[in-house]
Image 1 (cartoon, one colour):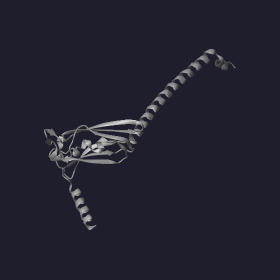
Image 2 (cartoon, one colour):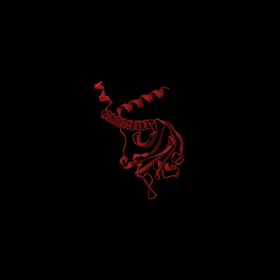
Image 3 (cartoon, rainbow, N blue to C red):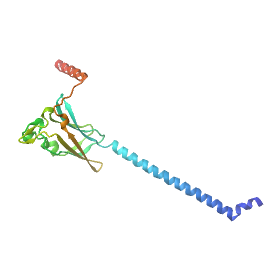
Image 4 (cartoon, rainbow, N blue to C red):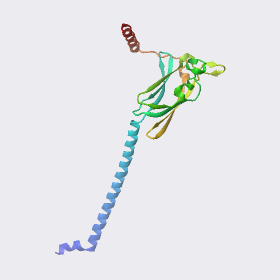
Amino acid sequence: MRDLNWLNSTATTNTLTLGLLIATGIYCFLTYRIARENNIMAEQMRAQHAAATSPVIAVNLQIRDEVLINLRIKNSGRATARNLRISLDRDFHQFAAPEPDRNIRYFGIFQNPIPCFPPDEQLLIHLSQGWNLGTVHNDRVITPPEIKIEVAYDHAGCRHTERFEFDLAAYYHTFQDRSETSKELRKIREALEKRL
């Protein structure tokens, strides 16, 4: 019986209570840290999911048929871009033609919103041949060496805006050398078209 008296002592009870209080405090602190790290990871996962399932509007230049410079606008994301607006910062006359109706800045694509631009959809706009870049007409450059494109679209209740700048001077007097495989494929296609 005497050995059990130490359990009833106030000092022993206070010591055990203090130890339990410290253990509980450590447990609460560690639980808080784990919860905070889980929240950070969950936020990162939400951001990754949003990025993986959102539209990605890419604007780039392409050289076609060895000399033709095109502007390509493509939704390479996994979701539809809504109310897509594309704007060009200055006049650019297609193929250096001075007529007002050849100014691509006033083409419908740059004047009117596109209500729905689904994934993998793309638009291709002929700009000019490499040798026509920098053409001057009536003391103004009608195929300017630098252009800026702005795209704005809606997705998931937010408006997104992206800007692209192109220095066309790098394309002055250029052409694209096609690979032999591409040339051979073209020959095969033409031969098949002749048979049909």
